[in-house]
Amino acid sequence: MRVEAIELHRVGMPLVRPFETSFARETEREVLLVRVRGDDGAGWGECVAGNDPLYSSEYVDGCARVIERYLAPSLLAAHDVGGETVAELLRPIVGHRMAKAALEAAVLDAELREADTSFGEYLGAVADWVDCGVSVGISPDLDTLLDEVAGYLDDGYLRIKLKIKPGWDIAPIAAVRELIGPDMMLQVDANASYTVADIDHLRRLDAFGLLLIEQPFVEEDIATHVLLARAIETPLCLDESIVNAEIALDAIERGAASVINIKPGRVGGYLEAVRLHDICAELEVPVWCGGMLETGVGRAANVALAALPGFTLPGDTSASDRYYAEDLTEPFVLGTGVHAGQLPVPTGPGTGVTVREELVREWATTPVVVLR
Ligand SMILES: O=C(O)CCC(=O)N[C@@H](C(=O)O)c1ccccc1
Image 1 (cartoon, rainbow, N blue to C red):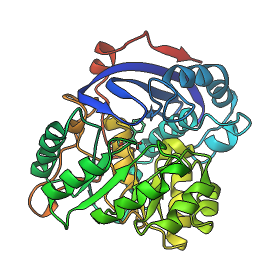
Image 2 (cartoon, protein in one colour):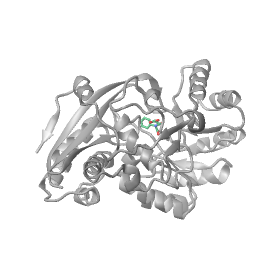
Image 3 (tube, rainbow, N blue to C red):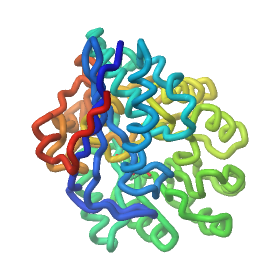
Image 4 (cartoon, rainbow, N blue to C red):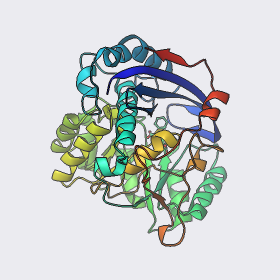
């Protein structure tokens, strides 16, 4: 399609409860949505960058700027843009994967709506429902943590993920394992907050029957993940380190990870995410779909991705009300009965959801930027 305009929308989304990780405590997300208008339709993409560059080097203001100054002009200058050509068109600009992923998702959404094809069909979904886990932030105390986890058990989530950091690990894990029982899936995410000096301490996590330990060390430090993997029984999973399929291959072959968290924004888009999925499937490495507190725009595409065959572990594809009292699309609500703890894969064209544009306008934090 010929891209005629690219709109940048900034939306303030208060969280239903503070979300604390080892690197930040968030109470509101400023969401950057991208809308691409072309000669044969329009589509939306969600940029997953946080308010500040604390998870990775990208952040909302930086993404808006790089789209405005570099990425949008590349797409606007091209005579024909398709979901499968966006990455190539944007390759001369180094990095900025989350910004690029938002644009690619918006072009894909427009293209697939026009073709009356769903994201799931296009990406290769093999399921109509996906198993859902839930991510639990660092709490002020154990009672607050256990109350929150008990609520998620009532909601029917199939897997609990606890944020941990030095000084908040053994006690919360032990308390939650006690609450949920020995069989429920439980994993932890350190968001790169430990160092090689913590390897002996981290070996204590083997006592809790965890599904995996996610990203204990910093993004670039594959070697220390290899050391820990050799010292501990619990499988290691990487998130921040895995910025594309090649890095995943290297990390897996070096023994740094035996599970991979796939986040389309972190790897530059849904098409790279599928490449990463395919490589992990070849190597029989289980993957799961990570989350970045997406609104229904990104959540819809993530649920479609999570329906691919290699996604054998519940992802951070929670219901909309895990983070937002009101979503920017129709809400994602966990199933019940045989679908307890699952979300339905959208079947409509494109992402299959409708952006509530009146809310995007009402909750706008800045005037929309229209690039032509
Ligand atoms: O359920 C969700 O969408 C969030 C899942 C989650 O814990 N995301 C973490 C992460 O490190 O994976 C995160 C939170 C905030 C910002 C970046 C990353």
